[in-house]
Length: 388
Picture 1 (cartoon, rainbow, N blue to C red):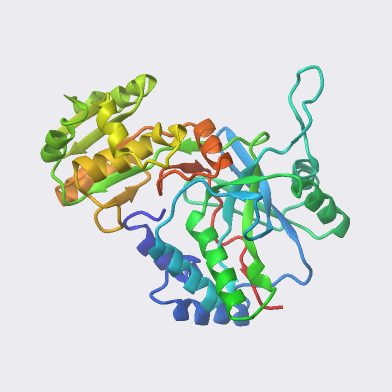
Picture 2: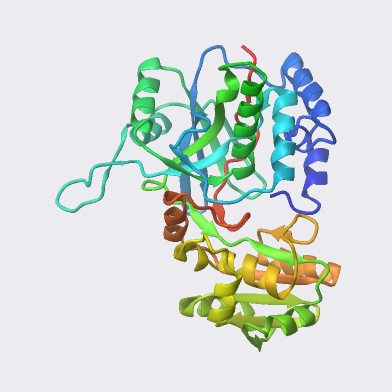
């Protein structure tokens, strides 16, 4: 997510900054700009098909994975989060206008091959082995250090035998969408649109993805918070008291109190200019009445589901939409946005990874923008065009 002020800084940094493509005023502007960048050599198309090993390295951590194409619309890719139609349509139109995937979605999978014997850890599969071997034995194709101090390196894998071994390994696995649900929905939307137009098979049957073996490089799973610009904090706390235990908390202890409350069940922190309140112990009868009848017990138990169905819809009478429910990936940012608007920040605990995997495996989806996996791939290293 590009925060306030960051877009302007990135645009000013370079006439070739990738935000000019992914966040243009209009899709047609991005299409023309992409053609210009290809024509003047700012972007160069590879001569031969390639997979790409991509590495991110920070202070005490590293992550490696593969950037390549995945088939769209198969059961091997598991979404776990709901989407909003507006952003999906916008991304589909951008993709259609530019005839490109401008940034990869992030997929995670279990890449072990067996249990390793004697109860030991699973040995890495071919894709993971070749990813690490490439990074350890070859000079990178490109390298950069971003403003946050993260080092990024990229290698191209063009050997067809290596590519075949990777493809054979990954063909046996399923992957969870960790980031990019709206982009994947746009992949599917464009594919459906092209097929309905009689275009048949084509480049729209595939989408750009960054695949990370979670056994070798576990991702971090953080929380995503809500900001309600039209609901004052004191009023939010008063209304929430109809179904929650509401406790005023001092600012200095608020985040630690929220984290500690997670051990006992669902908890939220309301924050704004008027103070901070901890919400715990939702009333079970009201909770049951608020939940969709078709939802499974595992879905009903999610904090994100309680937030969406009980707090937002039932107690606050707010429909979840992009105007009335803003998204913040950082708690301090959420509190600041609430203070600036006179509204309420709803600070959440991170969702357990096991719960996310369980939901996806059973074909359900958590409410939109409920999980924040990281680190995410930086946009701009690898783009994919539909042209030959």
